[in-house]
Image (tube, rainbow, N blue to C red; front, side, top):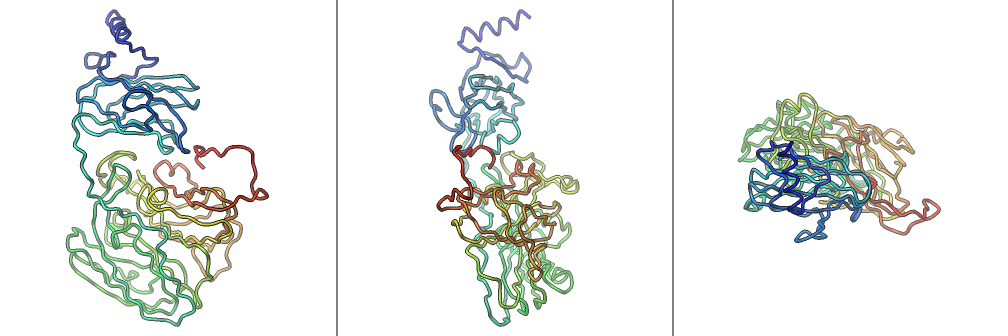
Length: 459
């Protein structure tokens, strides 16, 4: 007890008076007398929840980088500036603060930065990391290494050319299977397996009656055998039975498009779920005779899952976990390949009065999607991507099975940022979100309020 009183006395003498101290190391290894102190506050900034520096080099910096020497005792004090519930944690050092509620309340964590590297500090309140409350803690002389990871995220605007009212043709597509380290999120990467270096692979667009030749080459530097199975193909394995290609090899087949619809294609080399999860999926649109009616905007979107040994939010190269795959427990879920593909990497836009068509599919390999656009209603849903059945009308959320697809259409009537989600909304915390930005004048007869829009509301 005397030792504890002495420690607090030393802390007071140093001008350090924490309201709450979270220290998971033994008292012999860490002392409340900090070598380095940081002070931050919580705020809402540009529609996000953030930490903001209070003083010194980090003053007024949003989610500042905190740099400390290896071995230093670090104190981080956070003051509540927005009134909501918050905390702060540095998971790699096993420290987490008390929760603070109400403007002006504060908390402090104290820990020893016992290992060099780049780590994360974060608010652990559910939803707050996704809303922007995280930053970097850099310990020691960490050399910033320029990442060689490639951007595998698929551009949702790449929907190929509508077929129109043309006669059947003979069309050839070349697909290249690759194994590349790609960007998963800011600070994390994954060893993706792809068709043509993107996840999903290219959007192929044909019409019924077309004769199509698929040339599948496996890159010379691949390690694994790959293949392709088209759900639009009538034939052995959808083509997979004749396209098991070793590294450097090319195989081909030709099929006739007998049925209109929007169909998934994917790798079908054992372990099939592993190949699909790693990014080997895409879609082919088989338009009916005469083509689809013209719309103002078209987007190509696919939902996928990654199963990694590291927890969601971990930094660095993420490693595949077969156990989590078999348990159907993904750490990451995403639209178009990466965490930020449809929120930062690519910007989907439309103007008030335009009609939007989304070609949506689930690569999977395991989870059903409850596809929903927050703040909109689907005027037409071509259920299970059947283009010859009458569409459903006035639909809020539509189910899409793994290896399945849908086509949704809606007119955008009001400006704003509309969020694409799987309405199994816990999945948003693992990266599953996209934005549709609608520009134009507001019509107060459709929506009207004197209240300010809260961009931190999750909407």
